[in-house]
Image: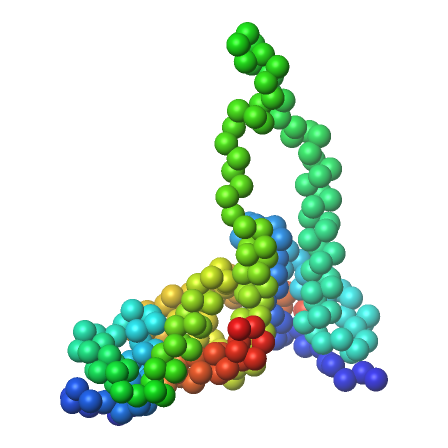
Length: 184
Length: 84
């Protein structure tokens, strides 16, 4: 049964941030992540006719994005041989035979599990933000994630500071409830 | 949002001050008002705890957003492809 519809005009507003966060934890580069999101939208446009409506628009776009991320890594790996850095062992007789790896500090000081958990938390937050009314969601994002000044947001939306705090209050209450159900 | 000059504020006002405080925008007087309310109001305490938890989660998640100017460029490019 086909229930989901597709509307490319709303993709950037609705899904770009979610896709961006999904990508950035996998490629760790803002510009590349943004490019991959854009490429995903283009690929989505090209294959719109294949959308059967069985999955949600977002799930469908994520499946395209996953392929784009894999392609990105394939591309990098095919260049790997060319960019290989060759390091010679030290000729110092005292350290002869020591592996280079043994002489550098282990850069790993984080906890992989908590990193993964934090990435998943980011996506859970996005899921909750999507449930907010559109204006609330935009203003909450601007204030909380992008760190805009109260005055700048008020000017942009032509609202008073009191109105802004009422919107933020409603958004925060809904977000806390949603995360309590799905995360905490 | 109703504003009072008294030190004893309503639960609703205390919640708004608590929200402002999450963004470091509550004034010193507002913080005093909030703290007085926190001493005797269970509801405000519960709200404050939950609000702090949300702020912590937001910070911990490293959540990011595409700048709105870049989003406009994305929309434009998408529109160009759509009209092709």
